[in-house]
Length: 244
Length: 311
Image 1 (spheres, rainbow over the protein chains, first blue to last red):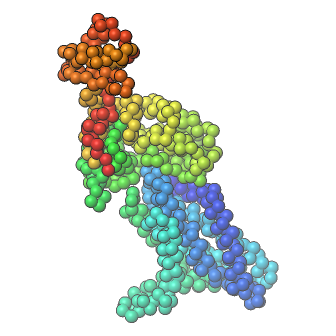
Image 2 (cartoon, rainbow over the protein chains, first blue to last red; image 1 turned 180 degrees about the horizontal axis):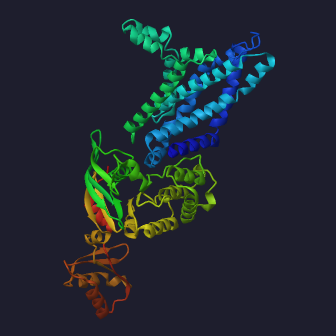
Image 3 (cartoon, helix red, strand yellow; image 1 turned 135 degrees about the vertical axis):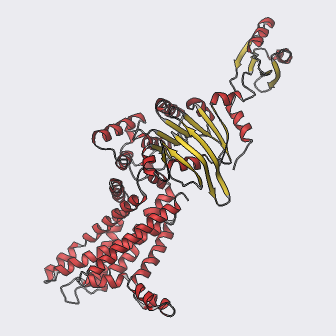
């Protein structure tokens, strides 16, 4: 576990040693605000809540999180540093966990830096701060889900561009799993139970209930299981592809 | 100790390592020699726990590198080929990271870091990004990482590649200094390195062991072993001198290098031609510019054994 912590710290330091951290945070904040004010009509709605802010998070993460996760393993494979990492006395799952936690902590930092909008909405009116807090938690969990998917895909390739594109597609399908775009593919032939199962995987469905301020235990379990499953798959992918 | 039994690594149709068995005891400095593509790096990667073997087992200090990999890796210091590291880190941060993963703590951590930084002369570049360092410094950072936890087993893949002659000398001295208590395996294609640091050499090609001996014994396989090279001050005497040397009972044949004017006399089996040639030169009053005994040429043995094999 100490090894996972060491990997996590190393990764976090590396974000800030390169422009990645600054570009990511600035673009995240700029885009989050743009969406809120222009597409979400934050002022025009005349309501003291942050739903125009949170509504766009899934779409923001769809492109920004894979940009962060694409390098997690692909870069190590490409530069050969994976040989060094894997021959240190740590288990693969510790390295996977360490890298994931660093990326997640970094994303949560970017999310936390959106706090001025929370202050703004309190200045303008009297919002339900409990609901906003819940929505932040939901948004953070969703970012973790995206990251875990991206990390697993990054482990399959040496090429960061491929990792990015595949992650965006995978996250897009997961986002819309509850919608006709995805479900129509299955509904014609698959048993209803399978269709329901796929529909229940939808990020969007789970996020929407949390973003309205309702923390349902099942939604939390959903994200926790998704992250755990992806990181487990990530470890297996690494073990299988070790060395090629 | 390192114990490898029947190691095999198959890449599709290519058999990179083919049923390799060997063991290495403490105090041995084993040099892995072989043409490019012979399977040196693949073998080292298997022993270091990076690659799984297709067949066979490797154990380090009694721990199987696959089933007890963590215990095995704790005892190994490994410098991968090309000394990869994290380019955006500084050597200090990088070494601290390795120390943390290896579980070094407190005073011991501080002491080990200071020691390897001193041993590899990294003081001047400690806070410079690794991607701005010269190839020699990057290699030394990789070596520092490998010896940081004072491991029982050192596996170094081309440790002196990219170093200048002074740095090579220092690294060889470093390896020599650690040799008594450790098991050291290095791979190289610089044959003088084997002479300088190894007390055992394994020559491999196409994934198979072709020779396993001390460097001296390998040199003795050379036709140059105990040969004598002579250079005369007066080059006009050369043809006559060559005939006279060749007629000695201790000499099987001679070769003349037209460019340098050196005559090399190869010994008849079991004979030592040095003394008779010296006496001959004395009695004929030749003015000798050079006279020396060859110990054998490793590069020639290497070429003969590997038969020009390359991939």
